[in-house]
Amino acid sequence: MATPEQLLKQVHESVEAYCKAQHDFKFKSGAPIVRLHEPTFGAEEINAALDCMLTTQVTMGAKVKAFERQFSDKYGWKHGVMNNSGSSANLLAVAAIANPETKDGLRPGDEVIVPALSWSTTVWPLVQCGLIPVIVDIDPATLNIDPAQLERAIGPKTRGVMIVPVYGNPCAMDAIVDICQRRSLILIEDCCEALGAFYDNKPVGKFGRVGTFSFYFSHHMTTLEGGICVTDDFELAETMRILRAHGWIREVEDKATWIKRYPEIHPRFLFVNSGYNLRATELQGAMGSVQLPKLDGYVESRRENAIGLRRTLGQYGAVFDFQEETPKGRSSWFGFAITVREDAPFKVQELMDSLEAAHIETRPIICGNIARQPAMKLYPHRVVGDLTHASAVMDRGFSFGIHQDVDSTARDYIADQFRQFLKGRGVI
Ligand SMILES: Cc1ncc(COP(=O)(O)O)c(C=O)c1O
Image 1 (cartoon, helix red, strand yellow):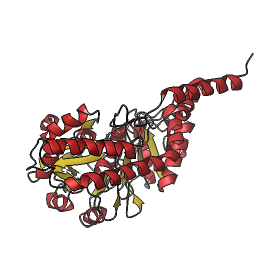
Image 2: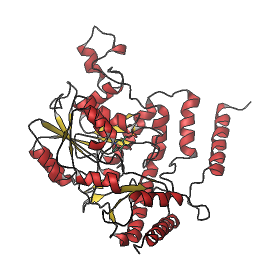
Image 3: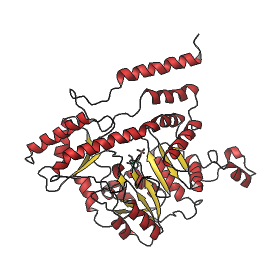
């Protein structure tokens, strides 16, 4: 009879053999495909998740806690609160800041400024917490919120700013932090597409009161679905732990204070706030711990791809605008974003169709101008200016993948497809 250890070894070895035989996501010149993303995980992550299943310890516990610590330590946050998606991280961050327990927080009816080029679940948590989004335009070079537009949008009810480093490109943080300090605004950083990005050698997500990240399948690293809120504010982290799980105290660090305050209620089921269930599973925590040490390598590949493609495609500046880093920003290049110039002799969709036909997957650049999305009509919000630049990105922008499995051969293939298309259109 095999021992449990022997059986486990067999399981692990079988998974390794399977992945070795089946998982080959590298680019092949003979059958070229450049997907928006390829999996960052393999046998090691699958075995870590399987171990949780086999021990039956699957609900949030030691593995999630260990990952929270590893993630926070890597970038220097005091607290990390893992949850089941980047959208949940945004909801948790906003809900905690807008919670009655949070001193100097946001209150229903307060305005929060957001960039027009954002993701839907950057904005929905604001709406869901009774806050009023104020939508402002982007800087067409960085694709991030334009600090001048931000300052211009501040009104008597404005209390916060929620920024998005679009496609991993850090925002102009010197200007944004300065505005937030001068105008007493709470800064929330939705870094769900910017893991591994730095501004002035400081990780994104570290400039505001709270930052969020996503570990969705197609992001820089993955826990399949998953996210995390990061902060140096202990009280806020405790509120996030409470709101994450039903409003009870089970996951807080300082349980004793709550128990002492309410001795008449059983500590096992002591509810001290409202709440959701946004918990991550142990499988996600375990996968995260295996993925994290690989993250820097993945980001490096993306940077190499971005620099390489910028070198080759950069010569077509007459028809394309490219996303630019700020001098202090170090992007983690979530994807390669291009806006076709208005006077180009072709439509963006024609180029996208041509790339798709060559098996290079493309997609629009996140929500485009969120103020034009139908859902926005359902909720109170304020628009400042004509959002020209976000609309240009929506109408003429697209992106493709520059993930860890895109290499120099793939880059040559992509550049060649662009060349053929532009030749056909008489651009070159
Ligand atoms: C800026 C931004 N915020 C939030 C999210 C939501 O993350 P998730 O897909 O993990 O819910 C995304 C998703 O890519 C995003 O790009």
